[in-house]
Length: 229
Image 1 (tube, helix red, strand yellow):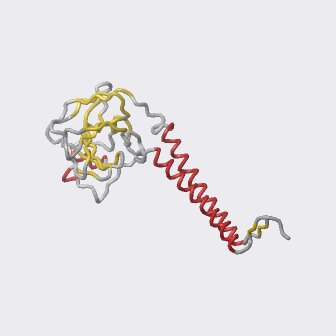
Image 2: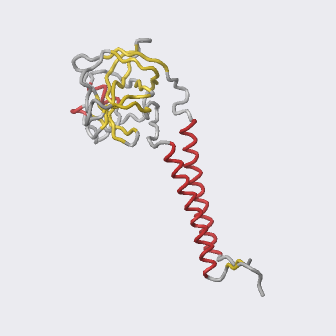
Image 3: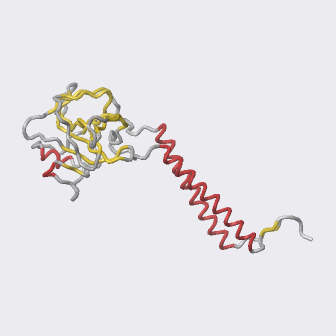
């Protein structure tokens, strides 16, 4: 075999190949992390019962999110845990669709088989939020507490590990899914298999780049097979 590589093309190819292989490795790492990783280290998921504050001046607050690739709305009310009496912002229900659909009836208590209680680190104001409608596109604990008339700098949220999502188009249809917001930093809503597919894509592009590199050298007579005569 005779091979005379073009220096600059070889350099750029090696750089591109390194980037593509790194991207594939990164996506594969995310695939493994989502299969086995702890999304909320140090915050146990435990049974929690919450007595809700459903009286006057305590409207349901709806917060936008994504789950399973679909737009959803998580609905919150203030309450206190039955176990310790700690005040929390409790997620009481969830609905799918472009606009929030509130529950037909408000419970006086919610019982979670497994939930986490923590202060949400993404609490911040946003011009997209609509406080007058109790609708929030970005979680804003201070704004929600003000709408409830609660004087506090911060109140932890209580998030069930799994949530039941009601279809906005057909309220009789519900599904149970993992709650990607049951962690201080929201979980990436992409399923693990999607990251594995991305990894295969980047690795495939790396192989294609190698193929183009060698095919170009072959077309220029810089790569040939067989013995010279």
